Image (cartoon, rainbow, N blue to C red):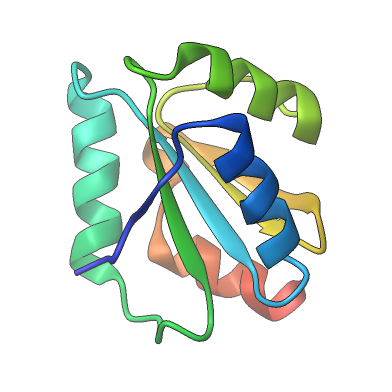
Length: 114
């Protein structure tokens, strides 16, 4: 099970950026009305095997925080998609994936590269 941290405000986003200098952070942009998003979230949760000190997982509910999603796309210079994950390290997005490209295997590989 993933111990998701809610991402609900620009203050939360800035705290995430600061935390990313200590350990990588993962953002899941999730739409509760989208079946593909539900599948991507389930796949992450089902395969998650990271210890808490390896990566900090954040959850963004797109339906309730659309403006924040736009801010994330702008700040990290990524095209908005849903569902989408972004791996943040040292204040930068080092990897993003969407739809069926979202997987723990991809996150693991990117953590080894980052």
